[in-house]
Length: 218
Length: 218
Image (cartoon, rainbow over all chains, first blue to last red; front, side, top):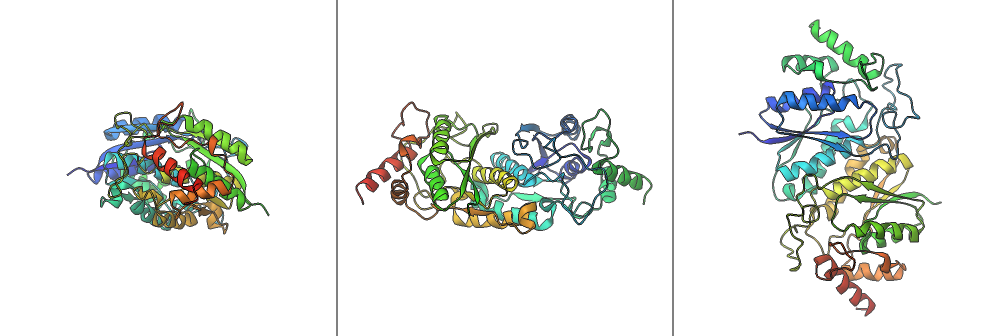
């Protein structure tokens, strides 16, 4: 039996790998990409390419403007993208206020209409523990809320928030991507907007180091 | 001290009363109206008029299309608006999938950027118990999630979900509206789209009966 899953697909390595994990688990894929005004518009094309490659039944690119109130280096041109490395004692300025809460809520709305049994999100708390809305305790609280939030769940259906990358290191994610034949050449992880990845933002550096290590079999 | 509050303001009697409750509690009002593709575009003008009347510091009309995946009589032209009365054993077809989850999540994002201490939402579970995302147990679960979701709350700030209408009957809400001098002539509760309220949809009938009873002092 193939159950439907809504997969939040940004177009980066993590969400692409998450999408392939959902397919490997036997789900029919309904990919949701939110264009919330992030700088890396190049991500949107990557998401389309990956949705196509994974054989998604449907891919929605949803436009909603989170730049209206700013508050993040990803959505506010007045805050610069950090390139100096991850300070694990602080929440990075690339944090977008309540982003995952908003993304999951949109996914929930679509999942309910589709009668989907799962929502996949590529959050990871190990190498990037700074984001509060990537932590397992946040996901657990979100799940509790979901169980009370919708007509579907109140009437007995299950909509599970699935986070297959939650406890993986970035190197382990890269290894999963290679094992699942994720088309990494189609993904876009850079915080800036091409034509080529900058190679110096935190996201580029973490990805490059992880892929190097994964290819080396470390 | 005046703390900021984000108030979800649809333009109907309930959200307008909720907005005046927030002002009465001493908050500076940041009103948020979401144009999610509901039929009653007339609501949007009502929301603007009420935000102006209450003296909101800022009013954002946020466009996001929840008609994309439909699933409700309010967002899907293929489902007709019921006029036959409220069947309390069933969730009405006017339920919009995960709507309050989505609205609260947007409000949360703005609240975090504003450093607001509260989010007001005019949910009510007494006369309209059909909507799962209007119930106190949903709000409590949402609050738990909020406490883990944002940089602000994780770092010790409080963002309270305030639901002053939660346990009021529709007549009690009408009485509060009269006591707080809510400009009811500016509000729009009808599910359809004017120029005058239809008077026969569930929302019109509940409002009209409540106001009649409140004026009569019942």
